[in-house]
Image (cartoon, rainbow, N blue to C red; front, side, top):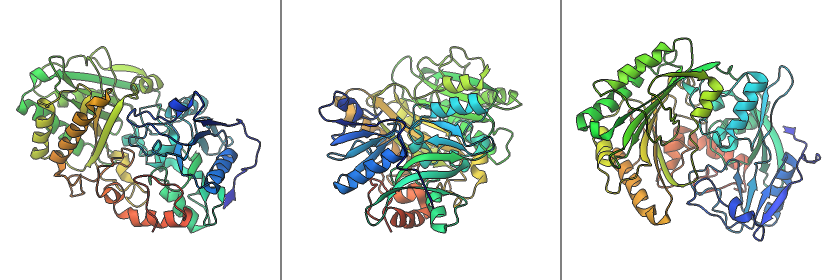
Length: 496
């Protein structure tokens, strides 16, 4: 076990934001404006030593700990800490390489944009991570991490080699340890495995990640952004679009597919009036950009000519002002596809698809999108491309068991007025129940559970839907490395 230099001189003096501080009202909120916390204080940490001391003090004083890396948690796992301590990692945002031939180190408070810009400009490499570049690395990576390059290269955690993590032992002593895939102690290797998709806030505070042999960054990317008006759709044409999208991915999501460099996002937005549209965004990187044209033709089918998307919503949204395929430097394309959007109230759900959509699901989509009771132009089902190199890894090699899927679904709804909470929550819950019968997308050969980084407190059997057969193993890791259950939230791993 490698001990970290917890007593070293901090690179940032740290700061405690208490309730009288004018920063407190802002720093007890996350990106989702539904959630506002009332902790005793927020501790901003600048290095590992400060994290160790913050954790130790909280344990000694009997205060609950939660951790904020980027603030994008979909549920109230960070802010819901009344009287406790929120550890803010935002000052720990460094990205560097350990020597000319070493691994790439990313601090736990970095955002994805920190990572992309530093890795690209200084080293010419990247990671297959998300498009919302204000997302914090700490939560994104520990939940598995995926993005527009995942079909080509796999999940973010497929390149994760080691982590430095601040944990608390059974005597209540906080310590910083470093574990890697080749640690000599099998218990340490298990702790690393748990960080390969076992979710954030479960085992400790990850202060540094090391990635080994990340892929070279693409030089260029080709982007497509098409839309069709709801007024041009009827049940048959809508079903045709959804079915073509599913069938394309069923045919072109195998390991080694020539379409591995293509990532698509079908934005099935609610019909909320005359200007409402459904949208299709896609990126291609590789040597055969004509494949993007082929994809566009296959998706259009018998629909009318595509329009410019007037108001892009959801993630991976391009917002191009032209229906022509556009070629641009890859880093600019990554910036163009940023889907962080404004701070609003939101609710989310997820599902993995192994097969194209059954007819009953397509009918449920039409029912809940075409004629919603309370139309909201920011409510949608987004269907992301998946598979290819993601599925080259065995289900038990990481803590992400979903390694045979072809699409990943994101149910999203956004609003600003608290008075609209009930109607938005009712819509997304009713839609989800209509799709999966109230049980959730229980693995059955067509669907394959849920994504832990899109947490959903409505799920009854979240343990299996997120982790499947890996959950008992995660519980053993939890019992070994967080025996006092210091790091916990509404859906944290339960100790064995």
